[in-house]
Image 1 (spheres, rainbow, N blue to C red):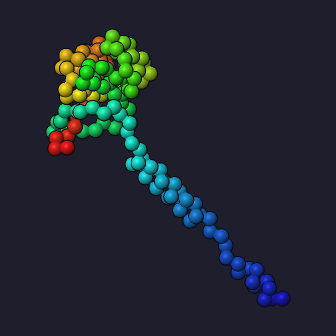
Image 2: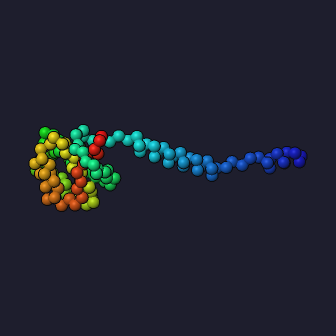
Image 3: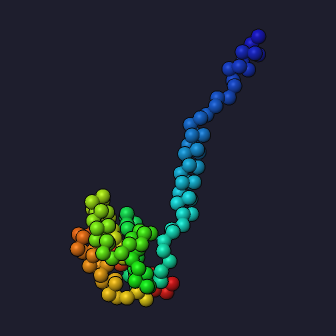
Length: 136
């Protein structure tokens, strides 16, 4: 009789805390690894180069000036006359948005200045100009 009672008392306990730690570690690992696999689907343009180019990490809205003069506001082609209204709508939603002007290096200079002027007239305070780093 004593042998049976000893066998029942000495059964191994299931340690669930280390298992939960491992599961959370794997979850964080897969979340971080998928962030590096995301491709940015942007409009392909040929940006000018600058030695001091750096990447902004905040919420930003791209305004692209194509080589032929078309203006694209966050993947949507719009006429220059409606750009100020569209920027105003975005500023009402989130006043701290960063507007990034991405202009092809073959784009007409006057068109780029017109886009920058529309940004200023609409009240945008955070404006950046996109470039590539030299040597790329």
